[in-house]
Length: 322
Image 1 (cartoon, rainbow, N blue to C red):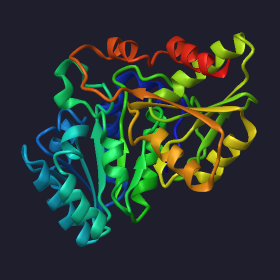
Image 2: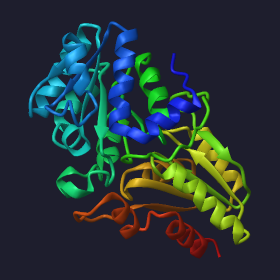
Image 3: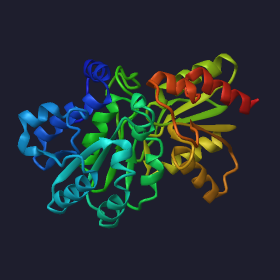
Image 4: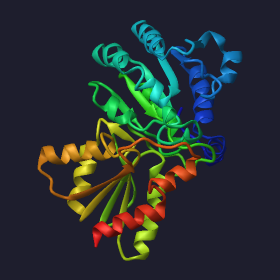
């Protein structure tokens, strides 16, 4: 069962996305004999350190060899198992792109990839460790499902949901410790179906991952200035919930996509492509990380530097709305 209590949500929030992933995957493995955990020598960093001791027969460490991580996972999937392979986002996406393209996408194998420290969550380690363009890479691969949970409760929902879904999948984990809670109580989660957290008339804030909680704050700020906002958690970037996006376009004067990802090829790009395909002329602004390389700094500094704090986003939206 993927249900969670408010107490569990608070506990998972406190330990952060990586530790929450490891704890929840251990729980899932204990319930599903087909699920395996794999890591490219980052068991401790992915919250799987305890699993190496408690369930060593269900944990595989390929060493610092991410391409091998993908190939081993593909082999397990060919045998009917459900491998969850994790590493830092740029390593498991960029470094492995061709292996994912051929072994997972082309062969349509049931491998679950988990990107750690996405966006600028690995700030102190520099751009080599940033998951800046991971969505753009994997969104281009046919058959891939891409999910970006907005908090730790949704991480639990996502893990259980993808374990039941026959599809190569990428789960993108943003944020660090003390993750802001979006869902304090259990909720219905369905892959490919957006969740409307707040309804308004003027601007639709369509966000994913860490930016969902931020968008709720943005809505509060804008409403103090007379701008009514909807907030939509578009947790599944592929397949896109086209019905939710179309409804948002029809019922608002402006849509703003907000993501901790490059402004190129991410959530904003996916929605812009859909709008172009159907001829939708609703104004859109794409708010995210710039088309550049990042610098080494802590997480909160990076968000402020790139204009992803609530007050900054509200100012950006208000300047386009007026």
